[in-house]
Amino acid sequence: MLAPRVMTMSTSASTDGTPSTSATTPSGHSAAAISATSATAVLNTLPVKGRAPGTGYSRAQFGPAWDDVDHNGCDTRNDILARDLAATVTRPGTRGCIIVSGVLTDPYTARIIHFARGEKTSTAVQIDHVVALSDAWQTGAQSLASDQRVRLANDPLNLLAVDGTANEQKSDGDAATWLPPAKDYRCRYVARQVAVKAAYHLWVTPAEKNAIATVLSTCPGEPVPAH
Image (tube, rainbow, N blue to C red; front, top):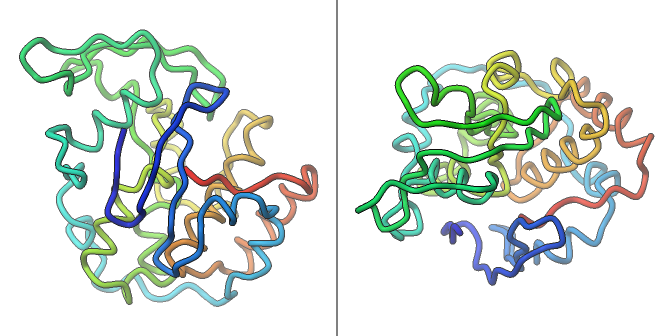
């Protein structure tokens, strides 16, 4: 659905219905090649440092919320809803962009959520930055160029449609402070965090690395995702 500027992609359907991509990261490595490597191996390539001060952080440092980075006429939030929800219905006259309803199988809680757009209902499904932007800021993103931060904020690799309450509970936590309640999803969750941090040259804190390694010790062959 999205073709973010951070990666050059070709897209096909995967077995679970989500797009499968072949991509090149900012470092020039193939994301498909990275995904063939275990998340544990990639985790061990990440620098380990203390958290930098949060001075200067604001959401605006990562561009407008839900920018249309691929210029397809749809903002990123709607692109991710279209990717992650089933049985979607779009608003007439929006060229299929605005999702007004759909069904989410929430990865964080394993709940089935019936999404309906509205002032009091839209927050039931939120788009999570798997590596929270403030966490990214304190682990290297403040050194990225502004356009790279925009890409990070809109990269499908770092975005999931999830249960709104779970997303709010997570807030800007890393793996040392929050993991999905659905234990069966934790390996895939931390593997995605590892993939994002590797793609954008971010580091992990000692506590974060230990937490991720603990999860991955239960699934040593878990690959990092490419999308």
